[in-house]
Image 1: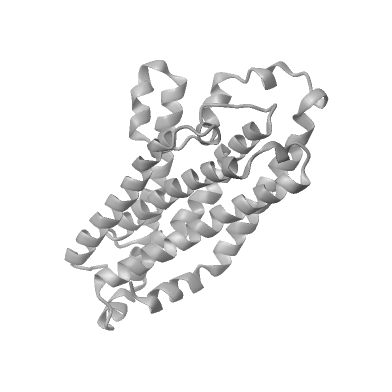
Image 2: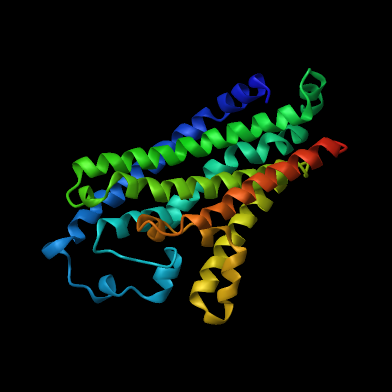
Length: 267
């Protein structure tokens, strides 16, 4: 890994990363703070809160529990806004790491320095993981803060909170490496962004469709989202499933290193 490429890449992504961290922290605190009105005897007696429709459960990752703190944390982690923030963090650096430099015509200048393609790409991969970590950490720290400041959230244990965030980190780290693989094989940042976002959307849709339609249940195995279920992880189950997103990330980076090393770079 080249340290200059690593620090330079992180420097360019600082503003975006800070914005994503602030957005993630704010959203998680709002969700957990608002959840306190749904606990115990003060919970509104609304039927769909006790038995949410199947479509809502599928949209929120398969479960929807609005009467307990763990259910609200799971809802927050599976909410479309959260997924958008986490996905943005995963794609911010990886998408432009190679394709963006090729599009700007600066990749030839970068690689004429004493930087091998392998060291260049691993530096981009490491910078992408740092951004993913920062965004995930902002959600985790705010959740731990909510345990101390929001009524009802204190029933969540620290280890209970750590498990779903660890799973989410593995999921979006894998997505960042898939995005880096795409970036290493195309020459336009816009195309890399479209393909990477398409991978995320199709993977989410496959998991959603599998939970909505019984005849498509087998489709869930093709989705990386299937292997990271926040509600399951909160209960201490599904830890072995995390091997799949970890494997996807490692394999994607390995393929990217091979293809980028052999690629004839043209715009």
